[in-house]
Length: 222
Image (tube, rainbow, N blue to C red; front, side):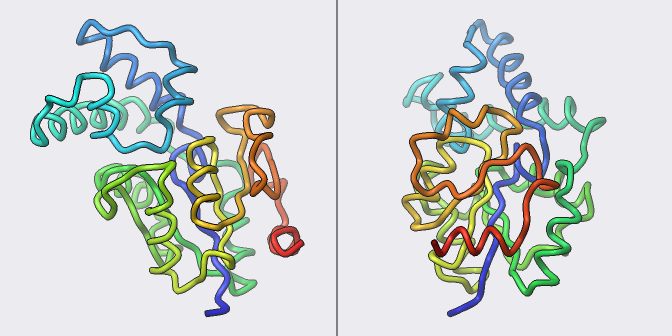
């Protein structure tokens, strides 16, 4: 398989929304008498699935049904907060148009549940742009495990070494590294220095307007 693929994390990458995710988590926890540090919470959980976060903060005694109900409640709160602001990250639409013109297959790999994938991709009319989508419902483990990236590449028909991941979180970049993929970091949420330890990062950008499609693949092969 010589097909080239761009694999996009969704939250914080396709959409610059992580501040709304964190706000909704903080509100969700506050309603239950928990106080958490926003920065620490993001660094430790971005890319993990909802049931993994619920288990961490509410204990492993939660049943699957209880965890799912809590996760659904939290995500409804997030969608309510973010809906008036829903928009693609700057330069994204033009960037993927250039990528498709260059024959690059596009995929999404996210820790988000189906409802959030629908909310974002259908809300922005972007679903048709992607040949493959993998989300929380498709894999048992969230990032930093590589499962969702490997599945997205498989569905896109591309080998890991021919795939470039776009991420905004250290756990996601680590998942890409474990998948054998290079990564492009979007600093929508964290500064560049938060990713300095990763040897698989080939570019760091504020948004997609700063990125050149062919230069990324040239960097990936060097």
